[in-house]
Length: 384
Ligand SMILES: Cc1cc2nc3c(=O)[nH]c(=O)nc-3n(C[C@H](O)[C@H](O)[C@H](O)COP(=O)(O)OP(=O)(O)OC[C@H]3O[C@@H](n4cnc5c(N)ncnc54)[C@H](O)[C@@H]3O)c2cc1C
Image (cartoon, rainbow, N blue to C red):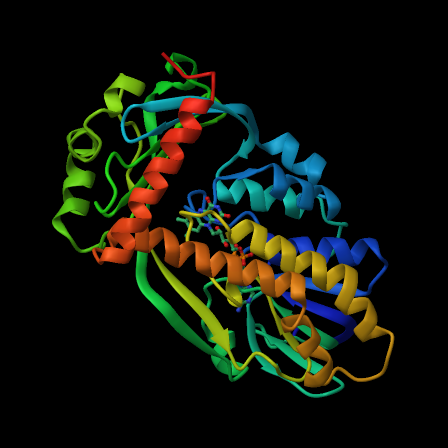
């Protein structure tokens, strides 16, 4: 491979969900492309705590991009979730969700790609221009493309090589915690549970329990600092810490014993600036990260992949050149912008409701509580 050079229309760097989805959708239209990832699947971490479930809107987008069957086959589906608010208002909600560990989701979409599309390797350097892009891999091999799609997630190295700046919009915005419950899923009195913080203003968002195969998985989301004593307490004695956090949780979930390691991931909200470059387009987390509390990361990357593959890339390839004026159309795309803006606003608003103490936020909390209580009372299917 060393020293060899190949030409493709599109080089997609990063085969996470974003890169795979755009590459798969483009391959189906007959575009000449390659997808490069440092992790070829065998060396992808078995545990990489990221998005572990998605809903019907995201499944519709996966379907549209051609990944529906692959994802149905690797996920555990649920049709109903018990929702508990304020520690007592509970109702059953018809909500279709599909769950799997993140590495399994990525493996499934990779396996659904046309054979030979994914090329293992670490991209070490990029040389960008208005017509031709040169991609250099760590082993010295090179390829030339008309367009580079950067889908490298939280990776920093290529941002620096391409002259992009990752701006932190909200540092240590939230904390995501994942663990397995000890009891098998069929021992729980619900198919899935979303248990919201019992009180507003307490820096906690919600706990969600959902099945992954025979296991009941837990994701706990809050607005705490990874360095604070609460995190050490949670790792040392998760059950006592959970009970102190949500005293009425045991009413909804009598068996709180935990089996697996407690995985803790701090979440920064970031956006990449200076993205309008010749020959390069940035998507998914590489463009803007999302807070898992509103759960918009997967919608955002799917929207990027869909708009790029269906609208922008076909138009860009139809005319000569790949200058930044063409690329700018993607970042100005109203569907993409609305999705990114909604993701950011929802993340900031949810945090404000949980942590802010000013009069405006207190009034919003009160308004939400009154509105939600009225809605719940109106629902006739209250859980006894
Ligand atoms: C703890 C946690 C929980 C979350 N929960 C949710 C949720 O419930 N709902 C939701 O919607 N979102 C959630 N998210 C967000 C969601 O997981 C991300 O938005 C999504 O995984 C981003 O996918 P991506 O393809 O952009 O990046 P990634 O999946 O990170 O893919 C990037 C790929 O690029 C490759 N790469 C990097 N550098 C190079 C290089 N130089 N050369 C070659 N390859 C390279 C990497 O190997 C990797 O495979 C969560 C995130 C976290 C951290």
